Amino acid sequence: MAGIKVKAKLKNGVVNVKAMAKHEMMTYNIAEKKTGSRDNANFITHISATINGETVFDMSTSQFLSRNPIFKFQCKGIGKKGDKVEMLAVDLKGKTYKGKGKIK
Image (cartoon, rainbow, N blue to C red; front, side):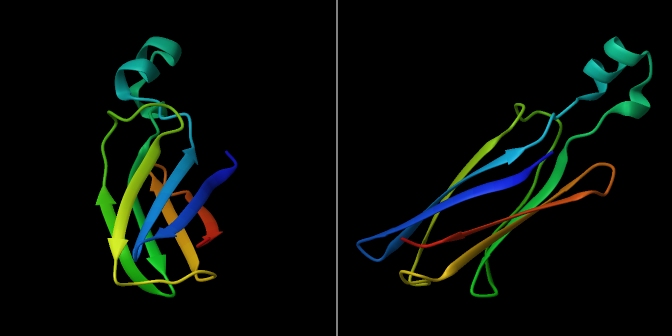
């Protein structure tokens, strides 16, 4: 797992963020079919984003996301060109994935 790729653009005062989390997203059913045990399931359970330390996106997820899911969101009134967008995802096993990008 490589982490999260983050792209952010500022247009007309609105920051548009697009991020892809590199993750296998193995559901309970797929884990049981492949390994015979549901214990091997692993998927992203939480993802959040901050701009300059202020939380702008916070979401709990379930097993029903595709492999390498893409997240898109917008925020208005926060951030300017050159500011950092940082994202953090946590999976079912407790492993964290991070990604950074600058607003262009």
